[in-house]
Length: 545
Ligand code: F6P
Image (cartoon, rainbow, N blue to C red; front, side, top):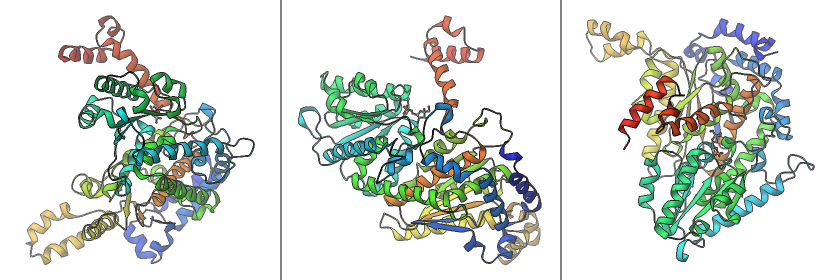
């Protein structure tokens, strides 16, 4: 039975028809306790979902949906190490990566010894490098670290590195290269000294085209500049679940850090994939981040559904996507340090839950992951917020901010927070005709002009949003925040009845790229491709130097 056939789904559907158009103004007017009852906090995170178009009754029905989908039971299966990634026949154990004490998930299948050994190896390496004891060519200390990886082997550490740049090592440069476009790597290489640069090639498979291209170019650059076939030994490290491939590439075997098939790429920030991040922020801060995530894991696993932060966030998303019909979810951080969070969440949510068949392979007749998009909120206000306010589309918005700033410009911080709170209020409550008229009359605008301008100046409001407020962007709170999103995605996947941990949808494009590349200079090969691709190739052939 699919979830849409459950009594809870039917009850929610009926409830939506009865109340979904109620304006947030009315909901707040009717219930003075609303802001209090529709908010939750855990550690340094405060989640306000009172500006969502729902009531306590909606929440009760959504919780019943979670019960009927067996969210608690499925959560236990994940924590027990069952092979819940069924299409790849794997356990899903990223939570093990932030455990402080083992064994886990069980004494008969204990992954903790290898997790702990890898964490120690990372700590030793990062400490030596941060202390200037990791040397490159002619014994010069490494000064720049370049993480070469893409997707989950890039976005997590890059996002977290940006979020924690206030506590980053003061002199070490840590850079991220993901794009196949040489326009990312080439200018970076111009700024680097090959004698003092270390490349960390991060790839679970060690076959990803983009990463291999960039890694080979880096190796060529080192050889061209240092003229030594052994350069790789001192200037490379690698993270992979296929260590033999990294060694074949030329990485010294003691510099290959393992990951395991039970960690999905987009859930791997906590593993050796986070090595560049650990180098930037130091092992202590990295550990704090793990502790924050572990606390969220415990909260998720042990807290009743109605006070469980990831569960409530997931249900709010389900309500918007499946019942109100919102197709997109905007992530709007009011903090420069969170600028890569929207991209990170795009992969986490859309690669995990952008599916249209169930666990058992049946086609689904309901929406799954929304389109996640976003941008720094304050910049967005002067770009796309117009559509959010008056474009007439329903967009589920997530505002994020940190109360304390890492930078000594308090007036900026206060104004930033004021903007964040003002925008969600404006989206929720809007400005009606009466208010527009009164305001313009007070400004002395002539009645005729008021009549003409009225439709342009009315804001319908009722745009649903949540606000996640963090006390500060410290490692523990950020670790907790990312674990919160991971578990939210997991709960939604359970309710939608899909496997959140595979990603078959990325295969086809990769396979086709390997057919198209040789056809660029081979007419015969090109003729086996579709007509549009042939034309694109022929135009490119003409203009490629
Ligand atoms: O193509 C998608 C993907 O497989 C992601 O799931 C993954 O995070 C990324 O590519 C990188 O993969 P790898 O770590 O194997 O290079």
